[in-house]
Length: 318
Ligand SMILES: Nc1ncnc2c1ncn2[C@@H]1O[C@H](COP(=O)(O)OP(=O)(O)O)[C@@H](O)[C@H]1O
Ligand SMILES: [Mg+2]
Image (cartoon, rainbow, N blue to C red):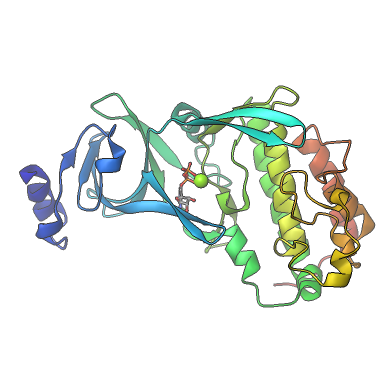
């Protein structure tokens, strides 16, 4: 107790001493690590500020194993991801996969992608109790999904002016996943809030690599379904559902117009936005509940998309 207080007085004199907590060398009990505690790992000290959270479907999902910290030696912000194991089944259409968290997998990908601007950066240390601690640089950027949703323009304008550049960036994100797949790794949790768009330069970076899955039909299949969901989201500038679109369009929908992963999300976007080109819409339909053909590799998806991109033109400069 005292030692955290002394450390903070020395290394973070601006930190109110009454909030000084414990000096933590074993991170196993991550639920008990909170604001004011100091984690000592890898020869450095990290002042815990708060738990990270994910905002999904309008609710805060607290992540007690992901700590937003200040690295006391440098004063810089860091995110510490602590060891957390869970596993659960996922079902997509008639496919089933077994998913689990693997801190070691995230550590491997951090090592594999060091210096690569398409991925978050970080290092792994073992704490005194032998637990994996990933020390991450904070990506200076915004979640892709809220950034796109908040663009203040109607869909037709977005599609004409911004989508070509968005598609270029998306193709870059596909390339990044292909890099992993070629090396036998998967991202594991491909979602639109796991891409951050950097404030400086607008580059897209993947975060969150600790999910692993066994999906025997296609080892990279879940990553591909994830890419499909993101592509539909980017093309639609949101997630249209039968409830959110004009009733006369909703009345024409069948189950096959909807996503294979989320049965209430429209993927046959041409029914809603007739100016979406046929070839692009055909790519989207690979992710519909009616599809009988699936992309087996990122390259196959990216190849089709590059052809669509070439026909879209340049859009307007943002
Ligand atoms: N490197 C990072 N830079 C910025 N924010 C991050 C970073 N890593 C995680 N986060 C934030 O913390 C949240 C939870 O971390 P994440 O790695 O997604 O944990 P989990 O594996 O439990 O989903 C993310 O959704 C994101 O908001
Ligand atoms: Mg996450």
